[in-house]
Image 1 (cartoon, rainbow, N blue to C red):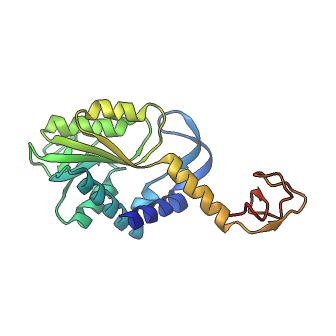
Image 2: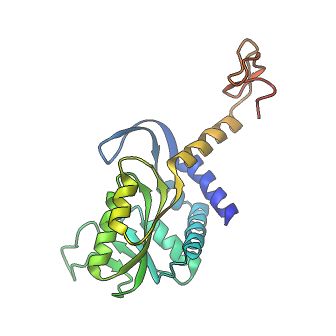
Image 3: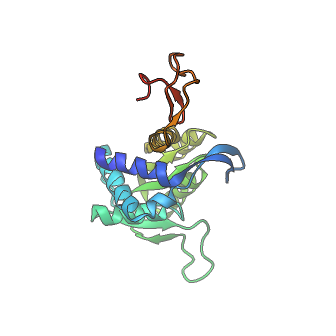
Amino acid sequence: MRSSRQGLLRLLADKSFRLGEFKLSSGGTSDYYIDCRTTTLDAKGSRLTGEVFSDEIRRQGWNPEAIGGLTMGADPIVAAVSVVSGKLHGFLVRKTEKQHGTGQRIEGFREKGAHVVIVDDVCTTGASTVQAIEAAREFGFQVVGVMCLVEREEAKGRPNVEKAAAPAPFVSIFTARDVRAEHVSRMDDTAPVIFAVAASCEVCGRPAVTNVPRNRCAVHRS
């Protein structure tokens, strides 16, 4: 499990995380952006997503019959976990009931009374996760757990989801801090070495021999 988690974290840091100035769907702004779908729809990323979520579901002991979430952030996660687990069915929650055919909001697995886990890619305000929880329960599912790939730890996302999910627990695979730290670390590892003898080490104040791109002396480079 550890190798799968670390591999998934690396992919999120490389493919899904960007620093800059961004406007969020919640209406707020942020100095970073995470688009998990560039990882969950990646061939390797999909496999790792399935493995990590399946392992965590087993670790929690929830024993669900199916997993699902609000389209479209949850879609690749649901498919990956269903394939990797080989036994968990999948369902998707439409944002609104479709206006034709049966008019149903739940697509895929539809066994009332079944134990299910709700999944999402990113939790900021938690609105999409809460919608999925409410729709699943309205349909007749029993929600035994809620999971997200990356929790931003802001905008009251966790308390909003925990309130809606109760008594089911809410678990995040990673936090945005985890992904950011990995992203910055990998930037440092791949940055070209620039000689800057006149600089001072940001750790101890001694002359910095190299900049990678941070000012560090020979002792504190690693």
